[in-house]
Image 1 (tube, one colour):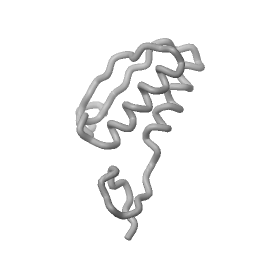
Image 2: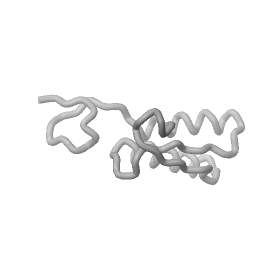
Image 3: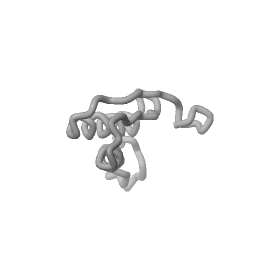
Length: 82
């Protein structure tokens, strides 16, 4: 069995996006354009994908020698903006 987007909790092979790398690439691009502050609009703290994105955001900022901008949390619903 193969799952898609299981959030790292499945005992089966999973096809998913590299959330950490995506966040690192996005922050790296913004930093390379000269941005000194990069905020992060995060999903719920308990969600696997939100944790991966936050780790990538923080790692990229650290790698560029930048301090984290605001971290704003919401739900996965569009009303929360995340």
